[in-house]
Image 1 (cartoon, one colour):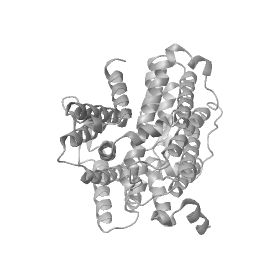
Image 2 (spheres, rainbow, N blue to C red):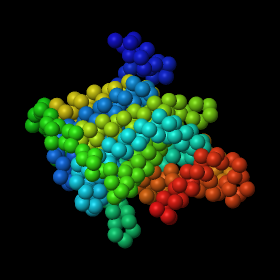
Image 3 (tube, rainbow, N blue to C red):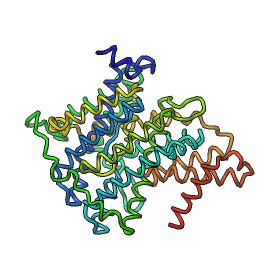
Image 4 (cartoon, one colour):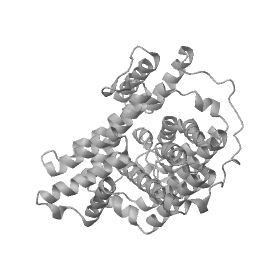
Length: 433
């Protein structure tokens, strides 16, 4: 079995091992398992059945991740995207007074459009058109974004009406445990211990139980809730209207550039780009992402996208689709062992996200700091992601600034036509649409 897996996923050839891939898969799952409960909590605000959405979340995540593993052989996991689910529930359903069935149909159309764009090789052309400088910057920007998410989950950074953000109460249990986890993971990593992030998550989870930060499950197993209340319930006729056009386009834009950003950032950190700085099998990866969105809409959940938490598994050495297969298996098991998955607290996963941010910032050493036309757009990309809380906005302003700075510095020929088209489209989106 081991030999077959090695051959099927080119594990040894990728510089990894089956053991490493399994640890990487477990780590990725642990850092993103929160989506199993957070996604149904958000979509239930739109009137959808919590239990049914939880089942849809697990199945859609598993299917999407398996597709990514088998088609592209990349260690990237997929699940319903945060931000997109909030847009679905609070902006479209509650804000625009659109039924969740219609909103679900908009997600379905988003996936169909993605499939068409991928088959037409438009999405992969965009991925490969992004210059190497911005690819490095996207990786670092995602690192800052992930670290910010982790610090918020750890309650180390909290909101402040006067200053937007400020330091939380470091004397409370969650920040203390998160800082302890961060220290433990960093020291293990310094000693080059394999699975340092996973060991840190497990340690803090165990410590959290007697402290009351989380509770041990009363039972280990539970039957998965029925999918019936949301399965194939989308209202396609209502979504095919002029009023819903902006909603569909918004889903398309945010999903496209969140996915592109994640693929570029994580693959750059993992050393998966070829000698030209392009991502091999970008088409297969994007196709898997697009099909996963369609499958998710049919099952009854918001847009499924490639998860930035995949970087956690990459940092543990995951390099092939076998990492994804492990993640998918765990999502399916979570349907039956949700009480166990539920006990992992944010205090345990938050330091892992901060550590991933640290690792991804290391790509900055590859930037050309002596060329202002390169370093300025790179910094704008990096700054925009955490400060706008959007990977898509970071890419948008990075491309705009890169094209404009090069053009007005008399070096416009260094920018491809695709980049100029993207810059114009982003400017129209920001100021005219």
